[in-house]
Image (cartoon, rainbow, N blue to C red; front, side):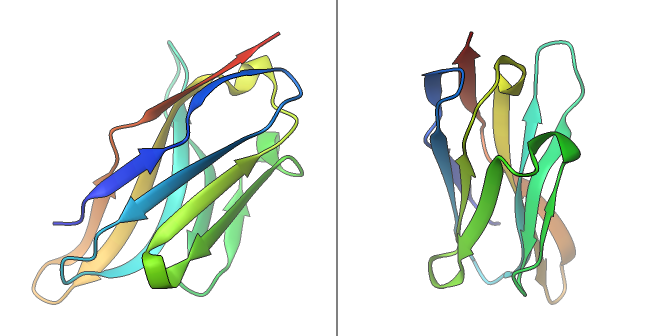
Length: 120
């Protein structure tokens, strides 16, 4: 199994910045993508940003130009740099890891979530 551990959430004022980090343990798996999802109260979990093993990224329209995802493949760590935060960014942010292992196929692993609260 791959363990996924997030850190870096907190309370910030609108217009402020915050950086989340997520570390994944390989445990024999080959990590294909790592990314961030978020879930606000009463809403479905949604993709925020994703980076694959080749470094290609994908962002939700709502965060383009404000959030940056980048990875340190040597450490199996992914970061989400968030700037110009808005109250609507308030949510629990979850790290997601998609990995492959012979005999197991593709598997998806999730972190426990970290709260990001943006005050107006």
